[in-house]
Image (cartoon, rainbow, N blue to C red; front, side, top):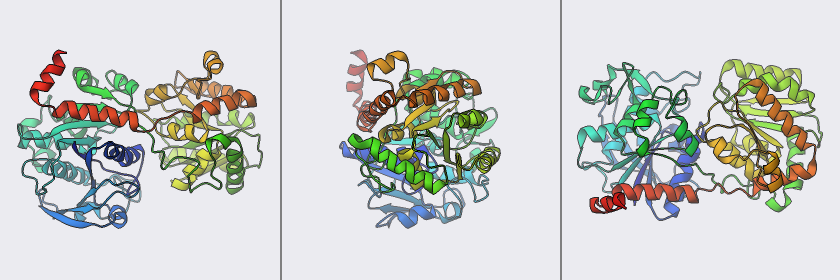
Length: 496
């Protein structure tokens, strides 16, 4: 199966969140299972610098009137054998800052064109007039930045096009722009209507993907159900409920070649699952020393690796922090986001420097060290399409404390009486997203942490979890094959 996987970020070339991890690991899992996969990514400076063996293979012209674009091919994504296609358009992508925002944290004013071009290129490279000989049978688009690609294909080649799959990683980000942008992007005005691109009199990239793709997926079964009603559907719940038969919730996976304590080069000392207690103790002591926390081996260390915003529930962490510290716990955080939350965690660290550490920014190395050293991972997200950090935490023997939503509810087994008795409990969850419920859940976890035999049992259940991509990649393969099967075969399957 030939699959073109289009994404605005791909680890390790560029990363702001979980999309990059998925875009780096799912194609590798598909390739490992026998599919012929290519990844399409904008030619950001770091991607151009990191990608190996680049060569130009096609001139894409200047379709949006912003400057010439070319297609570069890299021999493989670092860490895997998947070829990477880099969309090189210097006027749009070669700049300082991140993939979506400038160095000051402001959205680029031309994001309409930057991701309109990415969508245009994905469609062009998938169509009958592609300048590249290799053509996909399936175009797999991800989040709003590639949402226009299925619309372009419908406008250009309604009959002669590949199958299209669109994955929602977070429906809260929709790519909304003024309706006057439609002709600027080379799309027909006829598409700007309620059953097309229009969303409350604006152009929505995300809605385009939802309307014009053959199949829709999202990143956990529960999130697939949640977004079909308010408030999780963010105004698109009616459309998603209408397309429910075409929507699959496929749980994301973890890349255990990157996130595994026995091979993790970021750690002070690597450790095997069978020796996790000693390994975590060594890494905890080293992290406490590095962050200036009290060197107390028995103090529960609660870690946060997250964006700092309301969606992630970090305001609940700030509200409960005084009570958590009174329990004798320590909190170590790395993240960036809303300025008020950044300031709140900085202030907490300044007030209680021996119990609280706040690193504002992102460091892949420190993220690994926190998960290896931590006793608990705090993930009180108000909504969470899937979440990946809890998968990583499991492997390191770090117990998640989560709000029961989306992929967190699908992957974390609450430490109820039954869960503890059967040895299936892998974390702690609370049902209602408020300060009191979160605080009570953390206090319950700290209480069981003080019972070493019970705590070790939970840790062993965590480490035994397998959220590798094998099962989920198989589900994607089945979805692809169902889309490209000959019409007669599809009719036989539907009638079975």
